[in-house]
Length: 307
Ligand SMILES: Nc1ncnc2c1ncn2[C@@H]1O[C@H](COP(=O)(O)OP(=O)(O)OP(=O)(O)O)[C@@H](O)[C@H]1O
Ligand SMILES: [Mg+2]
Image (cartoon, rainbow, N blue to C red; front, side, top):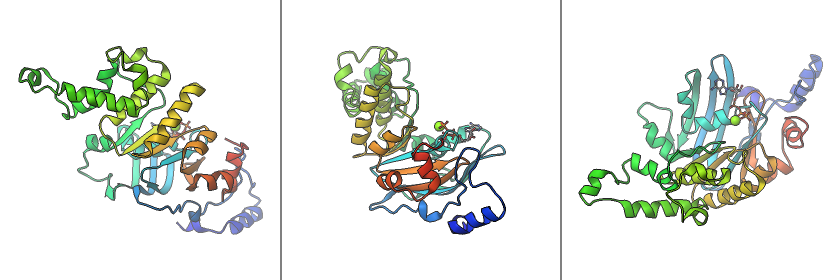
């Protein structure tokens, strides 16, 4: 903590005295980050609270003591140059990094005040509450309808199996309602309502990504994590995803990684800037971060001096 609170001027002087270059090889200004640059205060409750989160992959220290609170029902954008730890951070929010054998995670992540890194946490339940949408659309090679119904059926929330049908207890009607609701919420219904039994792989990339968002909604999540969800899409499909994210934030807490700075500025309420070395350097209201960043390195990054 103490290094975070070191006044910037002292660091600059120390660097000058020790003949340290004031810029790194990546062109970043050598500046010491300050904890107040990431102390974002917002009205309302924090949906998730991350404290002093460190991630190592073997000897590689990929995230260095990140602390931030994520407000509920809003869009939080994570930006920063390649390799700075954005995806690593995102994956910590629903313990997806547990699947990486070399990853070691230290620190605390709370969802509604409950620690998710403790023994006894049901990971299936956690990932229902904190869903994820990936960079490349990854629908199952099944029908559009089955893609949406898959999760609820697997979790036992919908019973459409043979036994249920024989006992005349089929939830087929309920399933149709769910499929329609999720596809409407994913802004895809009007484009696919007449071909729900077609294979999802026949949809365009943008439609597939909205289907994946619909699939994520089908298990009734509270938080939706998105890792560059529009980076493989053309501008029109991207605009649809951006509009959709805006709508989703009325109901859900959305955390999105994007390389597209204009996109972050357009769609997010708050922005977290990670820089090389796995540090969270600045976190605040999106307008403030883009128009008047505290950190010189963040300003350089946003204005395209490096990255
Ligand atoms: N599964 C993994 N095993 C080992 N190292 C990893 C793994 N995933 C990420 N890393 C390393 O951790 C660091 C951060 O990677 P991460 O993927 O989180 O960055 P990123 O900010 O998402 O980058 P990009 O913008 O390119 O997607 C990098 O040095 C990367 O090589
Ligand atoms: Mg990434």
